Image (cartoon, rainbow, N blue to C red):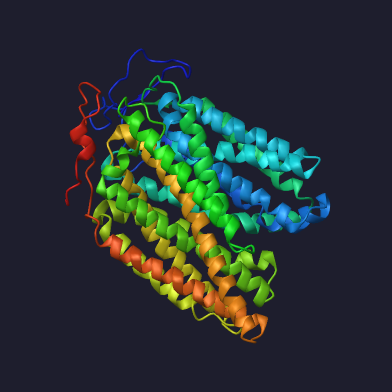
Amino acid sequence: MTTTHEPADRTPSRELPPPDLENAPTGRAPKAGRTPAVIRLLVLATFVVILNETIMINAIPRLMTDMNVTEQAAQWLSTAFMLTMAAVIPVTGWFLQRVSTRRAYATAMGVFLAGTALATVAPVFEVLLVARIVQASGTAVMMPLLMTTLMTVVPEHDRGRVMGNVTMAISVAPAMGPAVSGLILQLGSWRFLFAAVLPVAALITWRGLARLENVGEPRPGSIDWFSVGAATAGFGSLVYGLSRFGGGGTAVPAAIVLTGLAMIAVFAVRQLRLQRRDVPLLDLRVLRHPAYALSLLLMSLGFMAMMGSMILLPIYLQSLRGLSPLQTGLLVMPGGLAMGLLGPIVGRLFDRLGARALIIPGSIGIVLALAGFTQVSTTMPYWQVLGLHALLMVSLAATFTPVFTHGLGALPSRLYSHGSSMLGTLQQVAAAFGTALVVTVMAGRAESRIADGVSRTVAQLDGMRLAFVISAALALVMVATALLLPKRAKHAEEHAASGAPSETADMALEPVC
């Protein structure tokens, strides 16, 4: 595909076929072995916004004191961020097809900068909460924008390597968040967390707008506001309901989850009707491609395992082993860094070996790591905790890069934005479900053991062990799913000459290469 140099506000008079990178004029396609400049710019911006997502973890106690709020209220800074992501991401598939690359980038980073600036000067907790929601709205656009652009400008034979570099950035950022925030909080106020991010994000935005090129052509079309409302209510309620489990009582969270599922069903029916006119907000035809659907399942299970461990390990290390938040962040940071640094290597191996050769052993590694965590105790050596966590992160690295590349590569190019939006949405749902599952299992088991007369510490350990057993069982499903994947997936053919979608292409099955 070729990149265009049209102004950001230009709207074409008709829908054009996707540009063809493979047959681009000499000098326009990126050279083999080089990451296109547009991807490097988007990766840098995405790194900053994702770092911001986890940088608040250690600031909760300070915020409770400075703003005189309870722990439950302070946790809303994270919950509201997650809810906003879940509500906004389904809309990004439509949004990215209707605006140019530059406009999407300017919108996402502009909204993020506005939220960051507001958070820096927030006089009361309510304003800070609004600022976090604004930040999340910008963050929600960046990952689908990055993934869609990558699949558009990078040739198929080089996607694994480039996706590996992307994985490095988006894995290192959350791993660094708790450690960076712990260091900044040692130096001053929680406001410095936002004040430090603001100039960096502003510089990246300025450099990006100066050098970023438009990719592809935007397509005109109106938005279906009923679909927007249904997606917001459905996915927002589902994630919120799942986040309420484990906080005492299950009736209210279950009712919220069921409401969310009902609204998602309404949303899905609406999309099926809109697809007849080829104007859906989120195109569900991506699910007709088996390789993509299997990759979606693998990604969801992997995120459940990762989020479950991210919730359980801090509780174990801080509540039962007495480590500080900063010590906990430093202990788990090597695993996150290893996950990120292995991204490029995994990407190159994917280009050479295909998906199965990486995802199957990666899934087995996840099972082994989670099985090891079922033996947690008050005397488990810290080096063993670090080793198991590193094994989990490395195994996830061997899984996520091939899953993303394999799944999106199975789609026709006109569905890339919708495929990346659905991946992002399911990430949020899977993260919320994984968190709710382990917290509910741990709390239920602990209460049962306390009723039997054991000490609270022993009861909590039993609850954690059972939660890790459930997570390991889900990882076994990952192994079974990985065995169903073809080695490689070819995306469905499109009628490039006319630019019209093909029903045959929509229903095509990806053969084993």
